[in-house]
Length: 89
Image (tube, rainbow, N blue to C red; front, side, top):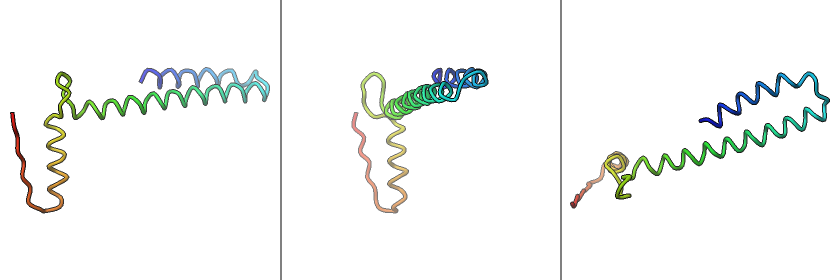
């Protein structure tokens, strides 16, 4: 999230300087900004992937939690077939 805020701030700064630059310098600045934006997007994607994994796992034991069980039950109930669930502790 911090990377996104930094990219927005950097974009505003870039637009403010565009009037004094030549076309070649503007192209270099835009390419630099595009690479920074790409890096920020990749960071957001990796953070979302980590969040998706931690959503269904217990932090301490690393085992699946109740949310995953509820989601799987919901998915299986769509097929209207008999379903058995065994919980062991």
